[in-house]
Image (cartoon, rainbow, N blue to C red; front, side, top):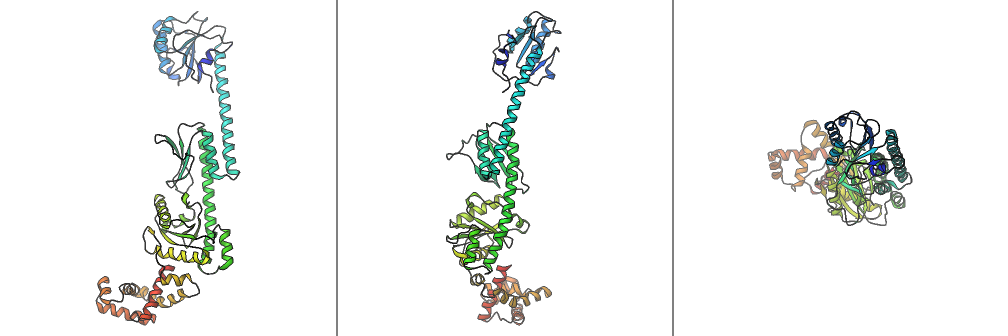
Length: 474
């Protein structure tokens, strides 16, 4: 600590003597200013001890103005050097200082001003060195937390200990970590908030409860947290890409049995427990964000993967509706325009495939959160890759799609509406604003081009499955 005014006045070998009646407070002395100016206030910043010999203070009025200017500048005390121009501290100076409550002390002729300044400077230097040592020690503690494998949680705990207060980290508006006690922090707590730069627009904020010590350490903590969050993001991208390939192989039926079990276990997915599947689909412009997007703390036991530009999340059991709603709120807070599809909770690789298709079919409903429903026949067949359903769908629909593209004939939309209204030509005509004969003509074209007649039940089922497969694989 810098030397206090009380310690300075009681320092041995200086022989400083208090002459005024103002109270002496143990406030730290920031500097010693030596001046003979009548008005030194423009050159003072506050917290100084002002030393003078009064060489230019020849009248009582000048002496009073000097005291007033020193007091106005925020100085702590006036040290008056005697034996040079005056043998004692002048009365008007003392009277004005007493009136303003500004301490005055006498510096005898045998004590050079430089001795007073050196004592204060040495104390300031020692304090600065101590602060640097503490700052360096804090740097080492925080860096060690990361290098020793304790991660971001260890770093933030150590930071809270060094600052002597509570800290919290928020990302995308969600609390990632907090040292707050179980009963919480008083509402009147004032928080010092600093942004954490990650380059990913994730609105990450470090909050520190006031008051706290070692404020210079916060800037270093900011940089370490930023580096660690960027490292975590890169790890998520790599892990989700690997897990995405695994998911793709399982969904495609390329990986089954014990091989799938071992691969899933290596990725952190236990096939002995039911795994709930959540599937996130973002708007096209934001799809790339899903690869690095952190998940809320409630998903700390989850395993995630990127597949078909979607984010798949496997989490052991849990309340599907609550988890999906939490994920939906988190995405909204993060500014990601996305929808969440919820699959059932299944064990074994085959069950994960089913859950994936349930979640994927849920996304087709288009709501922000789409809870699981009965899996359609198309999805059941898609989940079983033994059936070449995609090829059958292409055989039926490709001629229609090609004709529509070449002639803008709207055959596929007409077929979709026809199947949706259970084969009612009148309802199709009303919905599409067409004449009934136009609808019948289009149905004839569909039958001729595809080889499947929508009016025949068996063919209608085939066309219905083909359209649903096309939607699921789009």
